[in-house]
Length: 172
Picture 1 (tube, one colour):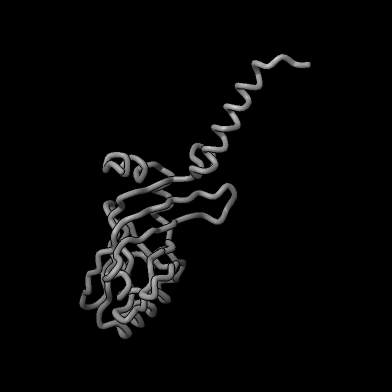
Picture 2 (cartoon, helix red, strand yellow):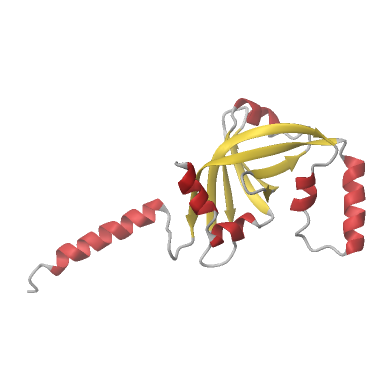
């Protein structure tokens, strides 16, 4: 997919709304060759989706061997809004707590006191983390108003074609 098309889709207001959410679903291929999907907190930095995880997370060895991933960010209302993203996971081991991890957890409702306690707990637990950075190489926005899944778009096209062909037939 062309970078300008990716940027156009990601800059759409609905995409921006979805990129401001807390959780994505990360799909990858596990070491045994089977698919996995895990929910994970994320932040959008304007160029890439950044997720952070423990240095001993089971997803890390497979991501090192098979870095191609897919992400889904969506809503729970009808009609759903869905942002599909594909890219390659780049892993970056960091000392301490990445700023992105603190940002991605900043949208949950916490009182200031809860936030202080949570951050102290996080800092006492992790001596480092792994940043999983995915730069989009393909994206699709589905809002069921202006955009649809490709299979549904095809059905709509086929229906419209049938209706156009049927309108020229004499009625008996």
